Length: 266
Image 1 (spheres, rainbow, N blue to C red):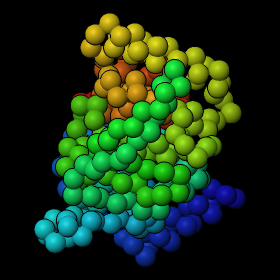
Image 2: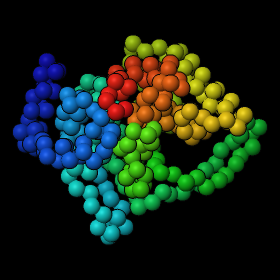
Image 3: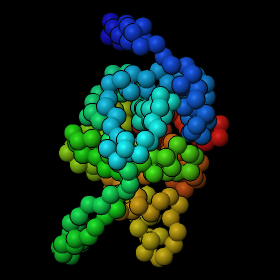
Image 4: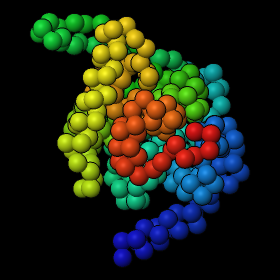
């Protein structure tokens, strides 16, 4: 009954808002990440992104509007598609519930700074300015910097939208991103903790010895960032993640119910 209702709602939506085939074709052509998708997968993603684009608010900072920054139909659809890619393997209901806390995506002209307070292992509080390409909060907007948004969409392990949307998923069971999102009943929380702890320990050890890390070392700054960076690599550079941390790739594949490593070009 529920599935029939969902299909009816989807059909009703697209009857009122016909899917823009040309815009979707253009959006895929602009981003290697979308071009790499198998056609059947891309079709499902496009239709889900089309609904997402109507449900959520996309806002440009006034300075971008004043500069006449073009953000046309294909660009909006490409943005929505990158957001929806995370939940594409989930049912429509689970997708909707997981992203219910996303109300607005706000695009700023440049990276921005936040004053951060952190306590170290000795109990000493440190304050510093942190430059950010994006940020989000439990019920706040997803904020991304325009240059970093334009640099996303490739197959290189970097995607600011995926990173920030991963934080939103992470906050599905807490007010803060702690690297431990809600898990389906077929996933073992103990395995999640064990796999991510092993990755965390490896990153810390490499940095302590002055070695290069196989994924962006920002993952070693906080457990929540470890999850978000891992998600970036999972979708945009899955082979790098698999070769570095095969257990983590397998874990995320089961969590997202997707296998990006099988996508052509990824």
